Image (cartoon, rainbow, N blue to C red; front, top):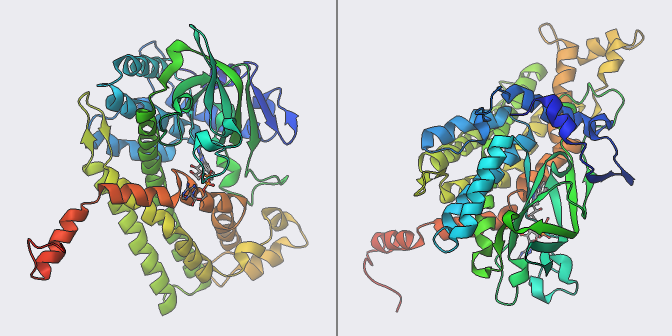
Length: 462
Ligand SMILES: Cc1cc2nc3c(=O)[nH]c(=O)nc-3n(C[C@H](O)[C@H](O)[C@H](O)COP(=O)(O)OP(=O)(O)OC[C@H]3O[C@@H](n4cnc5c(N)ncnc54)[C@H](O)[C@@H]3O)c2cc1C
């Protein structure tokens, strides 16, 4: 396994990564992305065990509902890059099980790759979302054939890919890019049915970063985002050579969607478990600020918080149902139940904004206007700020001020905006979850029940 220091050194590999118009020479020393590097390095140190046989427990494959459940607290403690690495390993393992009967040679490559990745303790990111061009057209119909990542050349040693994958969380800080098709491909789109593993420093890979990291000199008023930010990568494959042994799918259009479905499942389980935690946090902040404001027993405030509690409980219940109804593959990989994972992720994301609205409603305008921590330290303003932010004996001004900072940071500033859009879009957007939920729901069973209730059992409209 790698220590944090070894991880930091591993990033000096010539990767072409950019931020606000400039190429980054030294990622660990970069004033903003360097903070994210430290976060990941901290994760490495946290999990580190010496010895050749040591493995990161988060990256091992769950074999039962109990093991899946045990991942949840581990995931909450992990940095996002460790989390997407786990999801990538699980995507590959789920896809392997599904392609094995038809494509045993690719399944073997996936197995070997996963074992080596676990052994080398590397970080992998999920590259699925293409630039996509005109959304109403298929890859083959696009004006620009590169709108979806595809094979543009090949030799007996490997192939060359061109395209771009957008919004790739943590790309610049990882070691490997898991490139998979973003959706189903059809006959004539063989060159788009490509899945492969590409090192971040491969010639031709260029990554443009964006971040929601707070850019203030004093970040103490951003208690959450100043600790956990991770850049998003706009990843360009400008004619990148991929050796044969790193190719996991090559032209089998009928299997192209299978990788996206596998990723969607693990992404959405991650999203669902994140949102279960977020829902509890929102309840906690609503109750704390209501108490600090002296409003905890007012009926409309209690009703809103009760609604938030019900939401948090149902999201947690969906997560539990997804885990306890997991399926086990022939080679003993436990993967969460599709119906509960997708319905739960959809419900949690679709109602997230309403829960944030309740929190904002019960909190008050200081969410946005509470002065900074440094104003507490100024002789002229500190004592007055404490006096007027206090709501009486037992509620110190600084305590209430810091609650407002946390609520702003989590729900009403750059990170809050990022979280709002991420909850909806990550894992393929609400539309994708609706489709998968419908596919796995027993619609015929529901029709049967309706017919029985109507006294029409065994009848049909024909
Ligand atoms: C912060 C963040 C992090 C992310 N991290 C990753 C990551 O690590 N890896 C990764 O691969 N992706 C990642 N994503 C991408 C995410 O999965 C996509 O944003 C999402 O799938 C939507 O794709 P899009 O952004 O291209 O929007 P669009 O495809 O333009 O979608 C916009 C809307 O149009 C709908 N739509 C699009 N096409 C059609 C169609 N043909 N028919 C009907 N409706 C359609 C969509 O459902 C959606 O409602 C991330 C996104 C965000 C915001």
